[in-house]
Image (cartoon, rainbow, N blue to C red; front, side, top):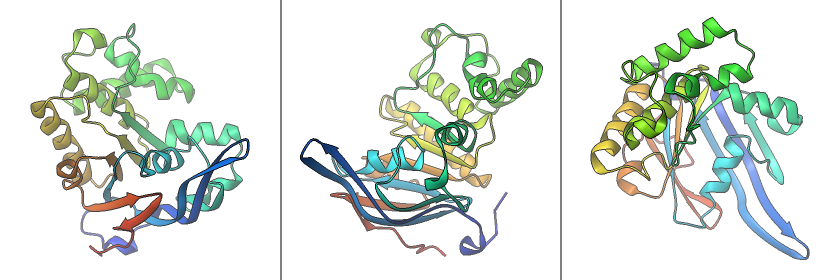
Length: 239
């Protein structure tokens, strides 16, 4: 989709400018993010890395519209998220961002294809279209022969592939993966990272949160966060 197009001529999917996030409990204030500025352009594969408590999870929640900044500007595809109401934020989370989580977050009682179609259910897509799109997404991740299997009947790697299919089914502008290999063995880890490599090759925008340097190194750009601040990778060194 964006192969061969110079990085800085592509639209910015994510724009953070001087973003702070402060949590308050009574008189206590904890600053989780401080003056974070970052751009991620269409088709980039960016890894955000940092130790526990560094602020990377808070940054992930903001990027996924699961939380909002205390101050600063956050825009998605040029739209100021600070102007969105709760209903709009819910639509963004469902259609604009495709989530992949460490814990898979699949519904145990539903077969794979019904787990994959859930974002389309919430978006009001009709049943036949939902099923067709879910089947295509599962075929893309190599699970065409597992569409009726429930999560408990699958390996961890297969469950994460279902989660990737669910993230893809609404054709989101950005895939946001939070420690996607954290619960996988080494073979499944390489398999899942291979899928992210393929998706990047297709021009998809991927943001991967991790604490593992070898996983981060698979990305096109590594953004390091420490004590709530971006200390490396904020600029487009590959441009």
